[in-house]
Length: 438
Ligand code: 5AD
Ligand code: SF4
Image (cartoon, rainbow, N blue to C red; front, side, top):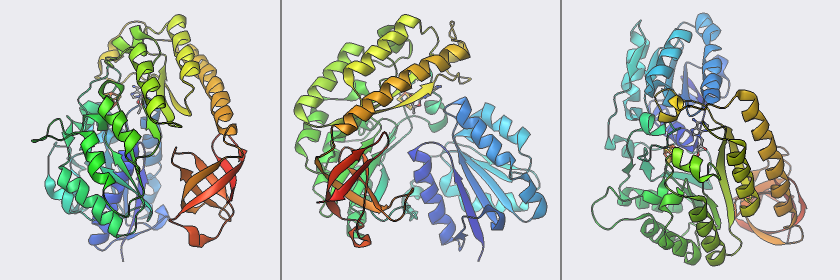
């Protein structure tokens, strides 16, 4: 049997695409290996959202060169966001002559053909033509988990935040047909899955491009009816599209978890405008207040960019203030990275590297303190945990997540995998909680 090895960088979209690729390859008779040196086929899914993500992927793919030298029959393909971006594709082609084929974000179902051409042709094959194919619906994915599943609900993004390359590499927003989404959730339920996470660049605008009266809250309502599924999550939400109807859905639908990832990006209105985000800090705080009122105990997480062009000390102080006012459960922090082709890359007032790094450190230190405080407040409390498997760090204990998306580890029997357990929190750490079964 031929063996394939997958290398996945970047966001959940790429993780999900890897599951579809695995499904196609296994249908073609390939078997997965976790040892790249014995693979007949290596596929990498790349990310270009920040320069650092790109460098990491490029470095790792460059390192595959000796493998190809030792085994000329090895086929290497590179997909995801980098090939879809002309600048990044050029970098890849120059640094990685050992790659046989490149494919874009909208060419997944072309994989069998690309594999053949890549193997046959001397020159690297490139297919990054944006195609909208329904063939993707016919692929049976090989999923990472048997308990929690990702379900794509929309592709692409229409927002054009001035720093972001995503709309260019993933195309305009297209909602997946609701019947396909709901059918997938029903199938997952019948296979024993307990949790689904709806995926999209901006899930809140789901349905705007569909005929009929579709909206994201309606999709949540219909999914909530599906028997067997215990938890529904979703990422990512955009503050400008958070409606009272969404908050109402979160407040009333029993399966929709009490967690919202709501990227703020900056606490300064001036910077938010320059980022083209479409909301002010006051509006964001209004959403937070309504959420906390209607969804008691909700956990909020966010993304923050430091060092956006023109960000002054005062602007950064506003971000620090926002983080301390909202008291997020967790934040993902990013140093602004100019992406060629985006508007912000040519904005004046690019912030020096050292300043960006200092701001990041200040932000992370404050947030770590807040996260730890919020986690410590859970000590002694009982929480519902969906048991997902053994802990990565210590396989002798079980690991799962609370409805608020916090990782909990505790001693227990493997028979609990896939079930909901009540756990009393004994110890809080920054990234996880330790508990005991009730
Ligand atoms: N530089 C830094 N961070 C970025 N993000 C997107 N583009 C950039 C960029 N050019 C961050 C945003 C987004 C997250 C997925 O990545 O915070 O929410
Ligand atoms: Fe990028 Fe903004 Fe779209 Fe998110 S909403 S993918 S940050 S353009």
